[in-house]
Image (cartoon, rainbow, N blue to C red; front, side, top):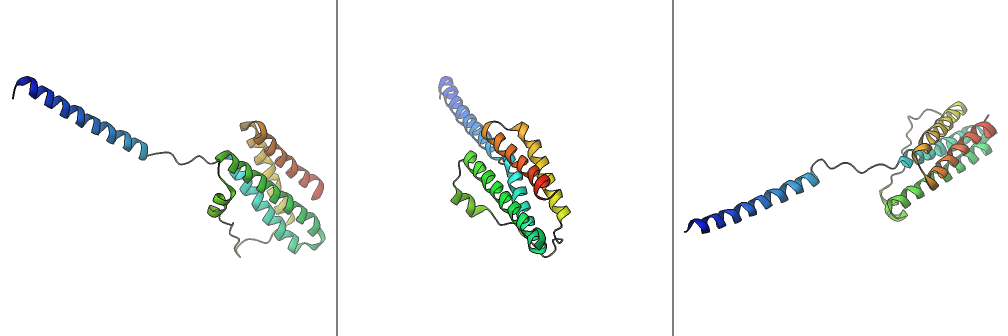
Length: 162
């Protein structure tokens, strides 16, 4: 074998081997340590709204004097959870059917303390604060939606259960 043939062959082998190493390294870089999918900032607000709705419904069952007001709060907070979830799905490009199949219902166990009116007030105040803290990071429709949710929580606190 001539020197020229030897160099050509070894160059081709090195190029081929280098390409395999490069492909292997880039594949490893794509799969190892890939970041977890980003959680939508509206998800925590939707979860809070669902928890508030469930708490208000439980409180309505044990406080007949305020049952009508508490049921109204529960309905409003369910509507907030639904609107926030719809926006999360829209932004993610998922369909309600696909998301419903993977969404688990919140667990409510017997260990949960009995609901109180002060507990309801505290939850609504926390939800209002969370919405107010989230709005500056949003734009357009999403900012308006979250601002509206926060304003509704404030109204429920001041008007419905002062």
